[in-house]
Amino acid sequence: MPANQTVASNDPVPYLVMLGTALCFSTNIIFGRYVAPEAHPFVLAFLRWTCVALILLPFVMLARKSRVLALVRHNLLLLALLGILGMGISGGGVYWGLQMTTATNATLIYSVAPVVILVLERVFKHRPISTREIAGAVIAFVGVATIISKGSAATLMALQFNAGDILIAAATLSWACYSVLLKSERLKSVRAIELFWVIALFGAFANLPFALTSLLQPQGMPQSVSGWQALVGIVVISSLMAFTGYQYGVKRLGPSLAGMFMFLMTPFGVILAVLFLNETLETYQIAAIGAVMMGVATATVPRRKLAAR
Image 1 (cartoon, rainbow, N blue to C red):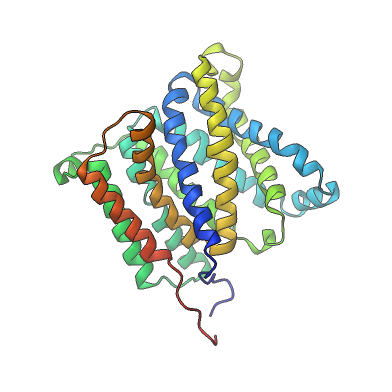
Image 2: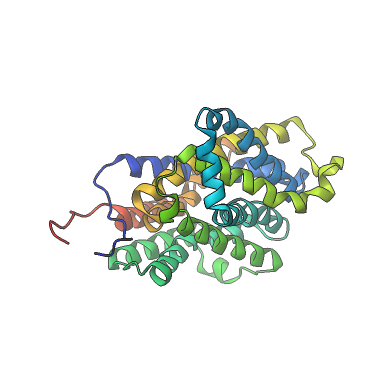
């Protein structure tokens, strides 16, 4: 077995954490509906990761400063790249793309991310892709497409794509690269909270150049109390809780298995919209959610470990 291949764990904790992580990530859609229309996309992303870095700062300061400085000194380029990929292109880039395309298109494009992670790991880390993972990805993607198309193949075929979709596609590739690089051997022994703080800080700097022109303008900031409340939700739930869980999942399960749980963002988003936005749960959505769950389970349920390598 290749040394860099992560074996699925029989410990249920990482899988439960990734279920909760997918739910936290899906809240970004709900909060984003309130604040994205009234704030500049890169200002929103800058505020998001600056707040995360400030909240984590006291906890990081409890650790040895020399350890954090050594982490940055020895991995400066890698950490900067993670900030650009995970919080820059996949942060402000997504909000910018959503100003030019629909949430439906964005969700469909982003749902390809787990498949892209599988391919990247296969190409760059020579990780074998099992038939079960391929089958699970296909089943889950069909479920996502069913939700987006409202159960109609004609609706799916009628989708039109534009420049915003190109930005979302770039963000999807960026997120996949972030997921694979996060599993780097150079970061394996780093404490999760210290790593997250440094990446969040680099993420804030990655968004700052694009936010500067609008940061000091009134129309660049959230305009209402509900907008600022939504930003708090993005910071605490969609960022702190979601990214902490995702980093834990990548470390325990590997990028490919952890990435599979991102398929759940679409059905979770539907459920949250029903609960908090008074949307109606349709029959086709129930069937599609079942398909997504089955696909994720097919790809991620741990197999019995081999006694010998």
